[in-house]
Length: 421
Image 1 (cartoon, helix red, strand yellow):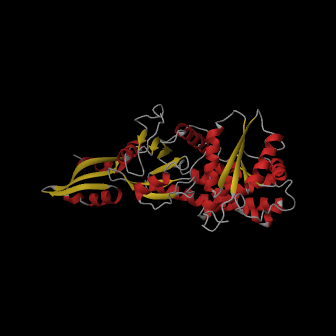
Image 2: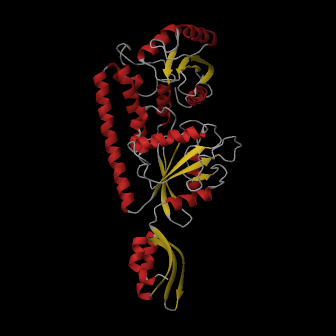
Image 3: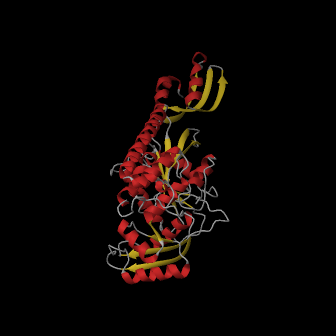
């Protein structure tokens, strides 16, 4: 089944289930699970939540609720049960046996969405690695083959081939993909080294999925990145040139979106992509200011960033970008808003983008400076060097030389300090 359903294709009917043990806000979690299901192409026809102190080891939900789930599936022609948790192989098998309905968990659903969204070779490799690592310990009890040939959500990616029938084959495949990704990472590190050598500074866009990161990227740079009102609309990082108010050109990079309880397999697999934030000079933490869970989304993003930094504090400036401020909202995010490190914008309308560009420029380490200088005619070649590596705002020939208004590297200005006015 293709990720984008065609008109003639019938969407799978999905039932969402969860066990509320009191350790999280399951109303919010189930809304998010519904969005994930719809993003994957399913039609959500019902939700069943059970409150209990712990999950049932054998069947996830209790016996009575399992019978209720089975009856609901029969009466509503349910094709798929999606659990808002990570299920064990035994739980999956027992629920499927009791309901005669296919079962996937939250992690499998997210992996499936990623499998449909990845476009680049690196993205596809990263998703396949995460899927294989997740499926390997779940081979037990699946018989001689994991292959699910029926199609549908949770079956995309490497799950259709013979490799699932042989653990050693999967381990060899995992190692092969790791080697491929190491080559990609080496090339990425070379790019980072080249950028640093050339003095290119980088701003990385991070944040919760569907917060408007791609819309912001397009608005700032005309990048042409896919933007949809769906979770994980884009996975592959996009880098574009961004011109700041001073005329300085920097690189801005869009990264994969985050989500609460993002499978650790994905965090690990997408480490090299997420590390764009590690090499950035400033991080833009974009959040949806119209979402009541805005503060939690910022928290999730910061936790994942901390993980990328090896559990240490983030060592580069972070600007909290409150997007969609043009939409009416009752969200009180005043306690998160700091005028020194926060900006309110609307990527859709362009509101606040000038403030954002100024905030980026202010947050970048001071390596360039705008000055006026009078170059004697015998030093006129200096102007060419400034045009190459800096920005010339204006120039005028005077009787005793060339008058420049320019922004240049501070290290370079030291060599021509005698001509600075």
